[in-house]
Length: 600
Ligand SMILES: *[C@@H]1O[C@H](CO)[C@@H](O)[C@H](O)[C@H]1NC(C)=O
Ligand SMILES: *[C@@H]1O[C@H](CO)[C@@H](O)[C@H](O)[C@H]1NC(C)=O
Ligand SMILES: *[C@@H]1O[C@H](CO)[C@@H](O)[C@H](O)[C@H]1NC(C)=O
Ligand SMILES: *[C@@H]1O[C@H](CO)[C@@H](O)[C@H](O)[C@H]1NC(C)=O
Ligand SMILES: *[C@@H]1O[C@H](CO)[C@@H](O)[C@H](O)[C@H]1NC(C)=O
Ligand SMILES: *[C@@H]1O[C@H](CO)[C@@H](O)[C@H](O)[C@H]1NC(C)=O
Ligand SMILES: *[C@H]1O[C@@H](CO)[C@H](O)[C@@H](O)[C@@H]1NC(C)=O
Image (cartoon, rainbow, N blue to C red):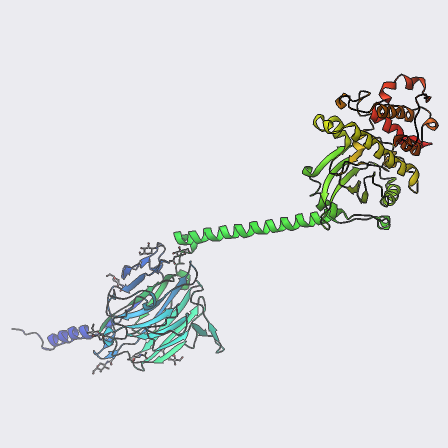
């Protein structure tokens, strides 16, 4: 019987034993994106996006996201010595809502779910219950974007730390890398730019190195953290490797785009060109939509305010330009000139509400002078002829010196482009025509009043014709040029304007409407002698030949009874005139005649 050679079963046994204790226990993997990685265990808010990005948290508050390699990794050799390991990964922290929180960590732990772990500053790793307990067997490299202040303390709100069983880091450094020249360059974890991290541990020398650099920089030679630490008491034989992230009151999206790991030498380099990009604002949450809306509304308001401001400035400048004085040289030589701005303000911008009336020469506005509070009447004359304005102003400014109780006092003048503005004392009782033709008011006007008004006007004309230093011809005496002051004294207005009108057509020199010879509204209540006097005087002043008319001093003497006007006075009328005698007897035409006496 042949027998099997003895060495064969022993060899088989040896091969079997070798296969059990062989170094095939080493783990090595490379994920350039997580599209095909069915080997990750995701927990809580963690998910893989459609394009293969591992999203640990979204930007909702108080979340935890865990992602661990499904199968455990052998981390302790000979049941006592921590295995060397090397890992590299690319992460991206994207903050939508303002300041980000809380952070993410690379974790080596005994559990894939880390039960009881808290969000916020605990990063989904530990809790107040077990923080610092040596039975945790937890190792983590934290990338922390919030500065914790109790129950453990962080150095700042942008750091990398080494954690053993506790969030109180054994060592932590502000996020940075060493450039080749040795210069330390800080890295903003919340920059929303992808950052690569390298973690290397040598189980023989017990040196742990942590290095970071923003993409696409190559691995810096000098690590940010190089720390001697024996992980043998921390690790158990089999551990889970993966990531944890959490949000608190502050939030961020925490993304991992690629991950390489090895317990057998240096981890393979990630192929940066293959890494998926995290979704940008495309996946905007309702919250961020709200903030985009808020920004839009805010910027609209700011834009609107800006436009309003620009328009206001424009309007202001335009108004200033409108009100600015543009004086011709000669204007400043003449006295009694008002600035246009003052009159513009006094009349509220020549508003219709301030319009007192309009007549042949232009509109009259009520105005209140800001300086004195005095009420004035501003006559706005739109002169259609520029020539003669200077001469007119020369005359007008001298009229400003006239003072007579039966003249409406001229306070001053202002020239504005084509417009001439004359400022007069305000006459509270308005013009005589209103009294004559307004039925209610005419009742108040007794014969005595009327006779007094006649005498007042006669004295006003006497002053213009004979008492003032130069002869001023009115030429437009009519009831709407006779104004009544507060005490019902009659005052003559518009004197001196006739010259201005020589250049243009006088649109309203009317011979107003014929009155009955005696106004029936007087109801027969008048002294016959006075009526006769006035009628005769009217006829006298209307005679065709000016020389035959009485002078104003004679007229006033007749009126106040100093001279008697006899019944047998002879009138000189042309044939045409005599046909129209009735109209000459009206009071208005008698005033017109009075005004024309000194034409010769
Ligand atoms: C993932 O799981 C599959 C099937 O279980 C296995 O073939 C593959 O090696 C695993 N990959 C890693 C990296 O563990
Ligand atoms: C974030 O994830 C959590 C957990 O999956 C979910 O309840 C929440 O609605 C998500 N928030 C947003 C804004 O997507
Ligand atoms: C994000 O901001 C919005 C608007 O300020 C707020 O309503 C929402 O709660 C914030 N979300 C988080 C997770 O902080
Ligand atoms: C494990 O123990 C054996 C025997 O004691 C030793 O030869 C070997 O080097 C150890 N391995 C490690 C990784 O320490
Ligand atoms: C540490 O955790 C263990 C296991 O949960 C527990 O029995 C022990 O009391 C804890 N120690 C402290 C100091 O909390
Ligand atoms: C850690 O960094 C130091 C300094 O650059 C280096 O000498 C050492 O080899 C590194 N160790 C590992 C495990 O990468
Ligand atoms: C971190 O290292 C571990 C293992 O060496 C120690 O047990 C801890 O006390 C230490 N923690 C800190 C905060 O230094």
